[in-house]
Image 1: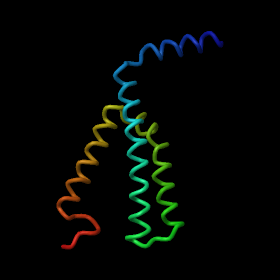
Image 2: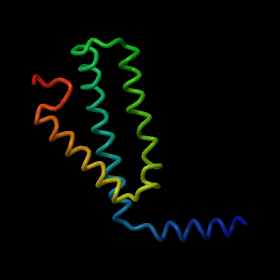
Image 3: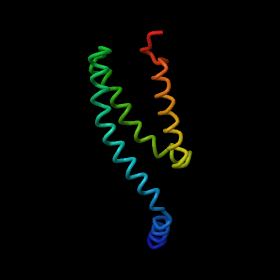
Length: 108
C-alpha cells in the first residue's frame, strides 16, 4: 500500500508544471509582503481615523489572516488561472470604484 501511495505521489509531482510552481511561489512572496504593509495601514486607519476599539481592529485583522486559508478551496472549485483572473478583476473593480468616488468615504 505504501509503495502505491509513493508511486501516485511521484506521478502527481511530475505532472506539476514549472510555471504553476513559480506562479504560486511568486504570489506567496508578494502576498506576504503586501499583507505586512497592509496590516500596518489597516490598523492605523481603523484605530486612528475610524476610532474603532482594539477588539474590532483585532477581529478585522483576524478575518484578513483567516481568509488566506480559504484560498485552496477557491482554487479547487475554480482553477488556478480562473482564481487569478477573478482576483485581478476584483482588484481592478475596487480600484475603479475608488477613483470614481463610490466608496463609503465619498463626498457625493
